[in-house]
Length: 401
Image (cartoon, rainbow, N blue to C red):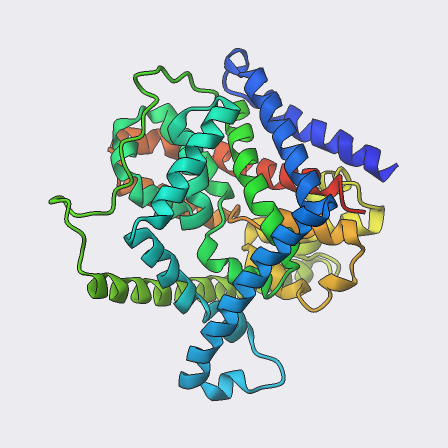
């Protein structure tokens, strides 16, 4: 019964994309069908086959190994933070970013990461029939994150028409930065975190193709280049580059920590105010009621659906780290299906604060006219992020019970 509900939920989530489409006649159904089948096969392979699970587990082990290496540096500077019975959130999840961000930046500097992004993007474009740059950008987001991917693609964004910029803004709601995957898998089941990432990429293309179908001519279907070098074409000296990368990683840690502290505190303040009206009223209860139908459509029983709905709402209002912090000590006690759909749903940056980050990034890159078009589509951006998370959870949930 719950499997049937999960299947129905998958269809309904796709139907919502069609219902809110800006131009239903322009939707390329053949391309959508190919991507849906591709995601079904991918979810099936990564969750149901020994080799698929081995690939995901191997990747998770690799990130865990990086985190353990990072602890060596943390231990040298802050031994009293590491030699404890249980490390706090900042030490266990955030400080390893000081190693992982520079590592990915070094891979970008020497050309390895741009090469991987370029060819995976081209392959994805060939398979799905989608424009080259949109496919390229979807892969780019997986490694670099939303604002970083937008920044290094600034030349392309300036050349593209406003409608395509809106597509990229919507896709940016569903990204995950590879540099903080290590933080995620310290808090949630690594196999589901890593399964969610490629499925999110394809779902981001599916959802934007439904909500904002754009016709791209062969002349427009080009990739300018992966920018990031100076105007003269010369790279910044390596150690200067590395120093900037480390400082950037430190800023990222402060940003995440500040956001988590502020959002948790603001949510607590809202709860205190609501409870002045009625002791039962909390932000989680209200959001749980709103998101309950969508959680139920993921194939959960009534109790798990309500709990899932609260986590979904909290994640959208605050961020994924807030939810991860709440469930990290109990997530392995959840039944397999609940654990899978919850982990996959929260593995993305889709929340209200991300909207501001994306709009701010575009404002610094494109002209005022294009930025105004993007700002007018905030609702579509949020809807895109929610639908991608729901679809990814539904795809993975089909094969984990």
